[in-house]
Image 1 (tube, helix red, strand yellow):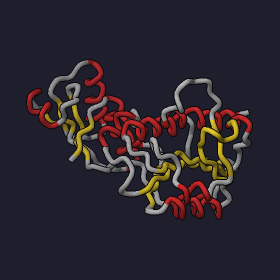
Image 2 (tube, rainbow, N blue to C red; image 1 turned 90 degrees about the vertical axis):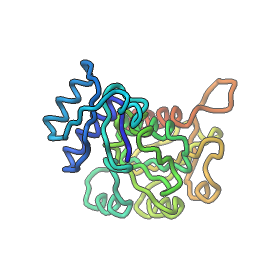
Image 3 (spheres, helix red, strand yellow; image 1 turned 60 degrees about the vertical axis):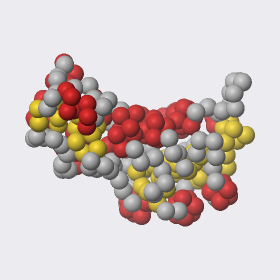
Image 4 (cartoon, helix red, strand yellow; image 1 turned 120 degrees about the horizontal axis):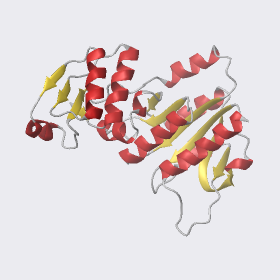
Length: 246
């Protein structure tokens, strides 16, 4: 069992669960300041059960709580979809622009959550990661993403290379993020695009690199090697959105 403690994470999980007809809760309440009271009201209106509990007891269950915690199933609430269903949906869509993000071994849950928050802000249509080997710390991811994990569509797969091949067959161009790649603002990123982000330290795996149609980089003047992967994700995704909004 997992307990969400961040205000944004709890709020977005309640909203998304209601929108999808899913269940969550109870909401454990030890003490409620003004912000927590707003969430209690939202929970009541969403017909989520409240449980009053002592501060000591809640600290034992959810050490990082701020007076409230939402009990959820470990992976419940994430916007999961299969890649097959996603591609089938595209066949019936009139949208010309589609953006997919492939995460290759992003193991730090804080990075994973921060990336999902960027995906929500910049309208990523799907995030693909390797099942069983990506960041699986639901509470940390939900809190770091400020609840975006409940909204951003995600697909897990045992084989990212095969997923890239399926995307290419569906008309996607695959671009890997690389320090030595072409400046991202010089690359045309309209249409069906998939960006690949490599893991912290390891980068993009060899077989997945071989499936990339090109590589994009972020010109910089820093003295250290590169940007944090979640920061790089925000910069790259912003550029895609900037081009598409012109």
